[in-house]
Length: 287
Image (cartoon, rainbow, N blue to C red; front, side, top):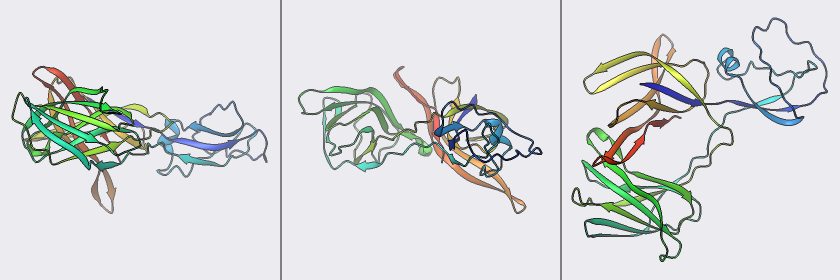
């Protein structure tokens, strides 16, 4: 098992072939070339070797053009604009023919990409399908036989994802053939996130320590580069079926003591229903 980290840092600067020529400091130990074809306001990715030897906030980076003139710049950290959660207000629940049917009028004009079930039920695993319509006459399949579940110790996956779009009406079908229907006390609709135009990099993290104790495994990772801005962590494992609750922390040394701070937490899983309709979620978003 190993981990992949997703990250990226960019700079935005005004590039030109003119300017007051200055002498580049000869005692600076680290430098990399950035090849720019266009003039004007441009962006370029900061090489990972530069990020590694820079100060934490990258304040010691300098950019010079080919004439030796220093160029002003701004550091830009890619980030997607997270969508918002809204509680569904207009829906009807019907239990019939070994199915729980939820008819929803979304009342949302912007694009949505998932919906989560709110239930007090414990210890369940169900197959869920989602359909959409603009007129309640013609229906389209958004998701088919996707598992939702809840286990002990807070391990759960209650959200069904589907292609983002503007949907006026949704129908959710929960398959109750394996087990009795569960009570539904609410629905949470997620408006689609806006992805950054800059792609993340994928880097491998080395496992330098693994401590296993009853009910918990603690894995210490080492990143190949310092000062990275992390967006998510992905767990790579050969296990065919599993569910785990994951917490990601970082350690810092301050005033003579080691402190830990949470970067993210969630559930990773690889599940299937009756050997079919497999589903996996093996990444945790990081703040």
